[in-house]
Length: 82
Image 1 (spheres, rainbow, N blue to C red):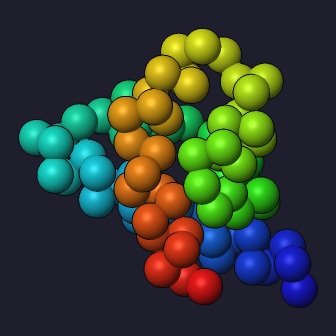
Image 2 (cartoon, rainbow, N blue to C red; image 1 turned 120 degrees about the vertical axis):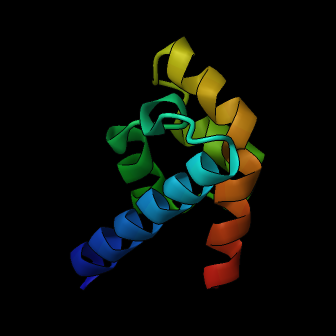
């Protein structure tokens, strides 16, 4: 079921966010990406920066700026799953 996969992938994305936080002196999770952004990533599974920017183009600038810093980590982890 795609919905179950999306929920599992969302949990995985949250773990990636925690990993980023832990590696950056306990950076706040909301300073990396919001849950809504992670859900968007989980549902669309972008495979590169272009795809990520395409699915996040409607997000507020502040949220896009956060992703600009950490997008590679999310993309790398998503590619690892394939």
